[in-house]
Amino acid sequence: MDNLWYLGAEESGVYALRGDHGTALISGGMSYILPGVLSQMREFGIDPGEITTQVILHSHFDHVGIIPYFSRKYPSIKVFGSEAAIGTLQRPKAVEFINSYNLLMAGNRAESLVDFDLEWRSDIVVLPVREGDVIDLGGFELKIFETPGHSNCAIAAYEPNYKILFPSDAVGIPFSDRLFPAMNTNIDQYLASLEKLAPLEVQLFCADHYGYITAEEARTVVPESIVEASNMRAALIEALRRNGNDIDAAARESASAAYEQMPGYFLAPEILEGVLKQTLKYIVKSKG
Image (cartoon, rainbow, N blue to C red; front, side, top):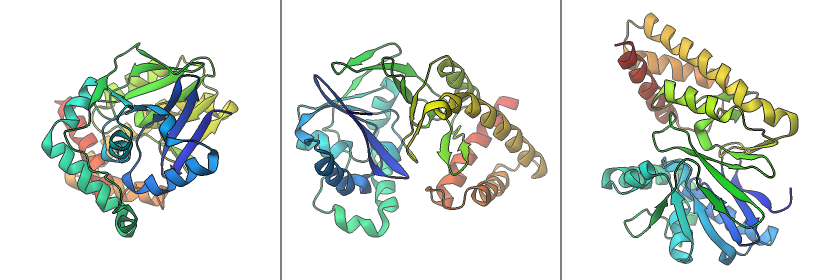
C-alpha cells in the first residue's frame, strides 16, 4: 500500500509509515541493517528528516538496533516504548547486552557500521505509551496494545483504518511455512496477549522478522499462532519429561529440533537455546 514500506533485511526489518503529520519508524531491527535502510529510503523517496516518531515494540537487542542512530542524527524525533521497555533500557547490564549482541549478529558486516553511532547510551529519551494510547500521524493512527509474554515489555500497534497489525514478536514469527511462537518469558501471558489481539480485523500483518503477510492469510496469523503456541508448550513439556526435568538438556534438544524444522533461522543456535531455556524455566516454575 502507499505510505508504508518494509525496510532492512528479510530476517530483520522495520516499517516506515508516512502520515500527514510525519513519518513513523516502527520497530528498530538489528544495527547491521542501517546501511540498507538508508539506501532503501533514498530509493523509495523517504527523507530521513521527515521521521517524527520511532516506536519500540519491545526492547530485545534485535528490535532496537537502529534507534540510537536516528535519535542522535535527528534529535526532534520522539521515541515511544512501554514503561517496562524504558526500565530495561535504563539498566547498564541490559544496554551492554544489547550493544554486544548487535555487534555479534553483525559479524563481518560490522566494518560497514564504523561511521555510524549505533550504541545505546543514557542520552536516548524514550516516552511511555500504555494500553489504549494512540499515536496520531495524520491519516494514520497507531493504537497501542500491551502484549507481554514474549517479553514483559512488549507492545503491539494497530492501525484501525487500514487494519494493519504491527505485533513484533508477540505473535508467531513467520518463517518458511510455519509460525514460530517465541514465548520467551511467560507462556500464559503470551497466549493471553494473542487472545487480546484475536478479535482485531487484520488485512496486513507486519512482522519484524521475515516481512509482512497480506489479505486472507493475514487474517489467520493470530489464530494460527494460538494453535502453534499451544503445540509448542506441549512439546516443551514432553522434552522436559524425556530429559528428567533437566532444563539445559531439554533446551538443547528443543533447539536442535527447531533448527531441523527451520534450517536457516536467523538466531544463532546459542541464542535460540537460551530463549527456549527461559521458556522451560517458566514451565517448571508454573508447575510448581
